[in-house]
Amino acid sequence: MKQGVELDLDIGSEHIVIQRRYEALGALNDLLIAVWFLIGSFFFLNDSLVESGTWLFIVGSAQLIIKPLIKLTSLIHVGKVSQKAK
Picture (cartoon, rainbow, N blue to C red):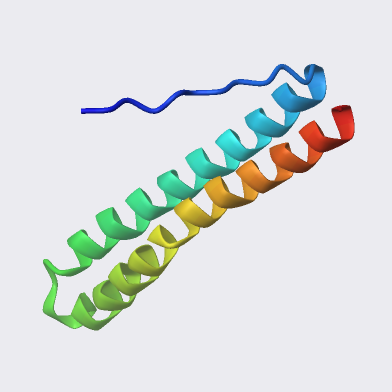
């Protein structure tokens, strides 16, 4: 199997700041997804809370879309910064 070549450009401290911000945003997103699914799971234990639990699952599922958007935005942002550095 052919392995891809990974390119890591060092564009200084601005690159590190950008990367850390997007990593923090991604971690916060993951934490919120886990919270929605955990609370939704507990809600399913009580018949009167099943509808609310379902909505929490829907919110968590929709938020799963945000993860690749954060990554894509990060790549675009870092790409723009690297173009400026050239």
